[in-house]
Image (cartoon, rainbow over all chains, first blue to last red; front, side, top):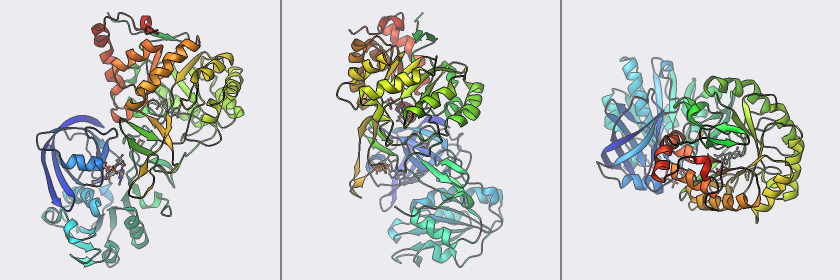
Length: 249
Length: 303
Ligand SMILES: Cc1cc2nc3c(=O)[nH]c(=O)nc-3n(C[C@H](O)[C@H](O)[C@H](O)COP(=O)(O)OP(=O)(O)OC[C@H]3O[C@@H](n4cnc5c(N)ncnc54)[C@H](O)[C@@H]3O)c2cc1C
Ligand SMILES: Cc1cc2nc3c(=O)[nH]c(=O)nc-3n(C[C@H](O)[C@H](O)[C@H](O)COP(=O)(O)O)c2cc1C
Ligand code: FES
C-alpha cells in the first residue's frame, strides 16, 4: 500500500451516469489486476474504494458510476485537480490459473477490473482464447467495448432489456461456452447466477462497505471456508471453493 | 529540544501518542508501512475470551466529519492473541503494548485479563466497558456506576499491571462512572469510546448498518470528548488517556491541556494510515509554535 497525490488528467462521462477518470501519478504499488484504490474526496470523511481498470507507469484509469454523494462529487472534479489515494489495495486476481480458454464475466462496472484481468492474461499468453461477457441493464450503460476489442478478445454483451447484444443475463451466454477457468466481478445477484452456472474453478471479486480498505478496522469481514477474511485485505478476490454463499438479505 | 515524554501509570513513553483500540488491529498492517516504534504505544483490538466474528455487514457508515462502526468486537480470542499475535508483534514492536479487553460477564473479563497477566509485552490493561455494538455486555457495564466498579474491582484482583478503565460517553454523568472506577482500584481512565448513532439509507429507507445502530467517532466528536476529559480530570486523581476525534498534533495538545496524560487516535488511522507517524513528527514544531518545552508540563493546563 502507498499513499500519494494524483493529478486528474481526464474525467469524462462515457455512458449513462458513468465516468472515466485518468489520474497521473505513482502506480508502483499496483501489482495485480483486480486491486483497488481508496480515494479521499474533499468534504467527505470515509474514502471511496474504486477498482483499477487500467494502469500504466504514468497513472491509473478508473471507471465509476454516480450513485451517491462521493461519486457525484468525483464526477464534478476538473482536470488539473489533485486527489489523495491509497493504492495497491487488495490481493487481486491470480491470472496464472487462466488456462488456454478463460472466460471473464463482468456485471455493470464489474467490467472495469475485468479489463485489467484481460490485459494481464493477454500479456502473459498472446495465444490465450479469452472470452469476455459483459452484462448491463441497457445499451446506454455499455462501456469498454473498443478497449476489450483492441486486446483481441471475443466480446459478448448481454443487456436485460435487449437494447444491445443478447437479451438476458451474462449466464445465458456463459452456459453455452466451454472454458478453462473463470474470473468475475459484479453485483451479488449476478455472482450467485454465475455460481449456479459455472463448470470450472474460478475467482470472484466481492464487494463490502469499507472503513479503511487496508485491513485495520474489520469493517468488511466475511466468513469463508478458510476462516474469517477481510474483503479489503485478504480479498476482494476469492477462489470459488472458499466462498460461503449467503442467502440475500 | 522539545520534550515529548510522558509517564502513564508509572511507564514512561517517548510521546503521548496511542493508536486507539479497534483501529490498529494488532499492529501488523501498520508495521508494514512504517516503523511503529515511533509511537508512545498502541492499544490492540478489543480481545475477548472466545473468538468472535462480530456483527453482520454492513458494519460501517459514513457521516459528516466522522464515521459509524458496528464491528461488534471481531477478534481471534485471547488464546490466539497469546499464541499468535503477541509473538508476531514482538518482531516489529519493541515497547510495552496496551491490551484492550472486553467481556460479556464479569467472569469473562477476569478470565481474559488473567490469561494475559504473564505476557511481559503487555504494559497496561485497558478494560473496555463501553462498546456500544454488542448486546448483553460491553456498554452495559459502563453505563451503571455499580457495574463499572464491580468489573473494575474484580479485574483488579487478577492483575498487577496498570489497570485502565475505558469509559462510555453514552451516560448522563461520566464523572460518576469515573469515580466508581477510581473506587474500584483503577490506575487510569481512557475516554471516550464511540457515541451511539445511526444512519438511514434514503433509497432502501432502512438503517445503513445491519446492527441498525453504531458507534460514532471521528473529528465531529472532538469537542464532546474534550469536554468529558476536562470534567473527569477535575472529578478524579487518575491519569487520563484522552481520545475522540484527535487527528492532528494541535488536537493532541488541546486534549492534554484539558487533562489528558496520553492521547488516543482512532478513526483518523483509517482515513490516513500514516496519521500517527505524521503527528509524532509534527509535535516538536507545533510545541515550539506554542512555546511548550515539555508536554508533561501542560497536562491539565487549561484548568
Ligand atoms: C473493492 C471495491 C471496488 C469497487 N470498484 C468500483 C468501480 O470500479 N467502479 C464503481 O463505480 N464502483 C466501484 N465500487 C463501488 C463504490 O465504492 C461505491 O459505488 C462508492 O463508494 C459509492 O460512494 P458514494 O459516496 O457515491 O455513495 P453513497 O451511497 O453516498 O456512499 C455512502 C457510503 O457507502 C459506501 N458504499 C456505497 N455503495 C457501495 C458499494 N456498492 N460497495 C461498497 N461501498 C459502498 C461508500 O463507500 C460510502 O462509505 C467498488 C467497491 C469496492 C468495495
Ligand atoms: C472501527 C472501530 C473499532 C473500534 N473497536 C474498539 C474496540 O475493539 N475496543 C475499544 O475499546 N474501542 C474500540 N473503538 C473505539 C475507539 O478506540 C475510540 O475510543 C473511539 O473511536 C473514539 O476515538 P476516535 O474519534 O479517534 O475514533 C473502535 C472504534 C472504531 C472506529
Ligand atoms: S475495510 Fe477496514 S478491514 Fe476491510
